[in-house]
Amino acid sequence: MINLRYPIIEDAEDFFRILIEGRFEFYYATIPESIELEREWIKRREYKRANNLEYNYSIIYEDAVIGGCNIKIFQDSPHVGEIGYFIDRNFFNRGIATEVVKELENIAFNDLKLIRLEIRMDPRNKASERVAIKNNFKKEGLLKKVMKFENNYYDNLLYAKINEE
Ligand SMILES: CC(C)(COP(=O)(O)OP(=O)(O)OC[C@H]1O[C@@H](n2cnc3c(N)ncnc32)[C@H](O)[C@@H]1OP(=O)(O)O)[C@@H](O)C(=O)NCCC(=O)NCCS
Image (cartoon, rainbow, N blue to C red; front, side, top):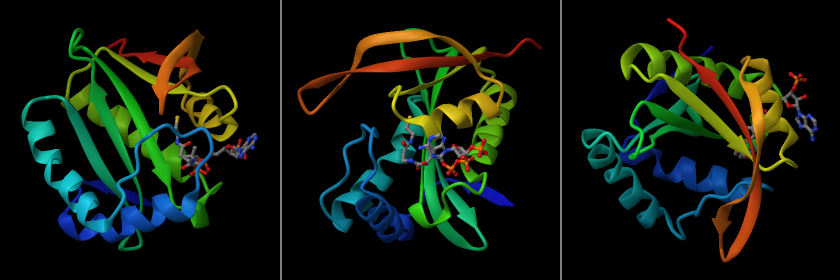
């Protein structure tokens, strides 16, 4: 149903619209202030991949960009990655993020050869928690004040999956 591919410059307008119109609650990512800055952000993705820092993907559904997702590599423990995702509000609750995580898990364990994959979310972000649960990630606990965003500290639930292969 969905495809993932590396972001291209032309995705900037879609990312910008989805993030601005989304007014997402409990989502702690800095949103670029303009489409031009979004383009700059997309240009830096290649460097991030080349240096095994982060792997970003555009989420494509019926030829349109409907979200973004990523796997961030823990630089102190490069066998560990963390998944992130956001979806166009017009496409919520259709199982898209659940399918995205399945794809990212495949990339993480089969291509990147990671051993451990995490998903962290604000405990109030029930949709994100459902996505982790539906993909059989196991709840490991609550990380108190682990997330700093705009000078506030937030708790995160920690969900993880181990590549048992
Ligand atoms: C989190 C997010 C990616 C989920 O995307 P999605 O494509 O709607 O997810 P899915 O359809 O695969 O699954 C959503 C599940 O959450 C449930 N859900 C949605 N809102 C909910 C709420 N307020 N309370 C409880 N469950 C909720 C849905 O019913 C569905 O579960 P179900 O299949 O058991 O019915 C999307 O809401 C989003 O982009 N949010 C903003 C960005 C964000 O928070 N990213 C995650 C940061 S950790």
